[in-house]
Length: 181
Length: 181
DNA sequence: TTAAACTTTCAGTAATTATTGAAACTTTAA
DNA sequence: TTAAAGTTTCAATAATTACTGAAAGTTTAA
Image 1 (tube, chains in turn orange, blue, purple, brown):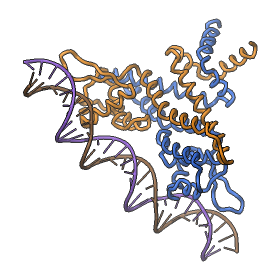
Image 2 (tube, rainbow over the protein chains, first blue to last red):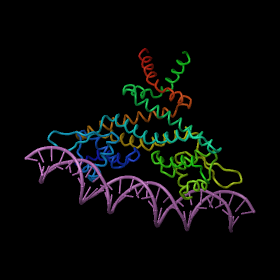
Image 3 (cartoon, rainbow over the protein chains, first blue to last red):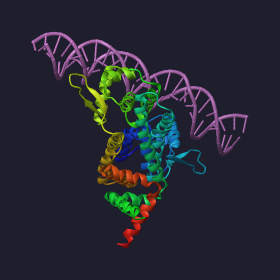
Image 4 (tube, each protein chain N blue to C red):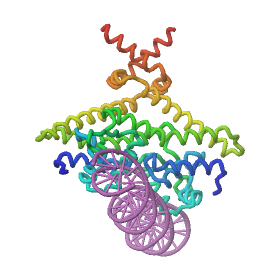
């Protein structure tokens, strides 16, 4: 398969960004390719388009499935597996966000909880525990907040996103209402 | 310098998480060490505590300064430089967040803007451009939203964070108000 | 000035991470 | 069954990224 320069450009960019988004170059390219192509692709087509080995594609698909970013299609009378993005762009972004939260925040929260339970036995440890408590509280807030966002309907999210610069107005509003009651 | 087991544990954990947070193991450990120690540390103390070379510390400090995560102190009559976290835990988290946005989102927004201006010249490119537009809009929303959050005062942020499960109520409220006016 | 105290740089090397491709495995149709 | 069409695995190797330590650079006090 031959990609048009414009599409190739996009795919290569996804590769360069791959490691910043939490995967590696090849997997970044695979996501880009699948998202930019209307038709699902076979593993061989992917290997061919990206000029990488068949085995590498297999491992990449596996990884993308662990992120829940791809789904498999079957065409009657055809034994090959066809891959496409699993959901809308918005769905994919949400999953990446969620998965990264699990990898980047959850392990630290677990460690901090353990450490905080343990009692300090030197002045340095007292300070250390204060700091750990602060970090813990921050991460917990972020975690709860992101779980909250995940629970909102897409429409509510849109609504929230569109608030833009009026966020502070809404907060003020809420404060006023709470003060009354 | 000898770290107590509890503190060492935390520092090693920061190292393991380092690459997930956007830097590398050593730099993760350095952040952990600086945050957990009440007193600012010299480069030699850091090298000694983490058992890494002096050169490595120098490079790490440079990197952390580019993230604006450390600040330098001087003690009268002492030629050494003393390093400490640059601001509160909250400040540090904000800067990491902001810096990552710059690295993970901005380059893609730039690319997408360019690509979208260019006209499509095949059915595949028409679809590709639609997808790119969708991604662009999503990323732009996220960018604006995060800029908005950065602009809020710490108190407003606290207030917003504490909303928790009442986020949807506030949105509903706002919708109702808008409908009236 | 100079030399002591400190910091930075960077070439060479070590450690880590990603990729290939051949062999093993699985599924299906005849 | 069997063999063709496909997929997965994984040891070997390539590519990338991080680290060391010696040399060069900088600053300060005498």
